[in-house]
Image (cartoon, rainbow, N blue to C red; front, side, top):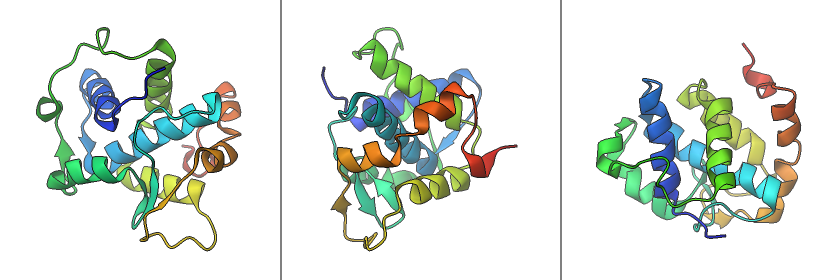
Length: 163
């Protein structure tokens, strides 16, 4: 199965947001892409995206993806700048689309701050220097997200952010 470019995954989230009349700011979009990859890894034991996540200064990031979005700062990222896509024609496998949609459904209502804090708390690791860009392995993601499918099956939101 072909791994995806983080930009492909981002386009899918931007499309979901547009369909629901929502906007995504840079940080939330980056964290959604990270979470989709982490959930995919926890379910299938392989990466959704081509790029390897790292412990960045402000939590887990994909370095090249981060650099591509830096021009947005803290602002809204628009779908037009990524190029229009047809959800049904995007070259992805069904399970890839399903995990992206699942990630959207679980995390779309979180604020940017909530989702950023969630990702930092979820992948925190004692002794990691968050600014040294140390890679986050699939094994580490499997360990940190191993209970995530149970949350979904119980239709629970992550504990800290239940309304």
